Length: 121
Image 1: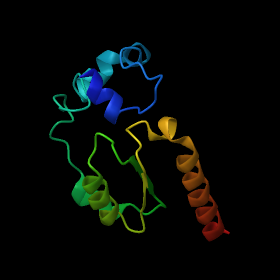
Image 2: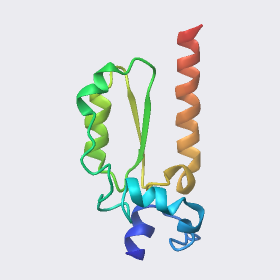
Image 3: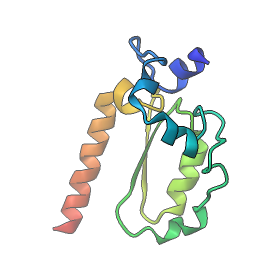
């Protein structure tokens, strides 16, 4: 399991998968998700609002790491379902791609916010 976490959650040399749970509200996380990111067993297991994604009417930036636990194809499908949504795939990034590849993440986020602010003015 440690290898999966290091390859798909946070791709840094300093990542310690055992340190993270101390920062979480573990009881709440386990209730909704289950005890890991790879197999959903919590109450969100069968939750699905995909058919309502077309109702989103605000600018939306979806981000994912190329090696994230959520498959890129799933994020692409989600982006297609949201009108005007943009998808950023952080090359070689994991689930914590804002941590393991921060420069491209924040550059993309900044560019997105700049475009949205220009449209509003």
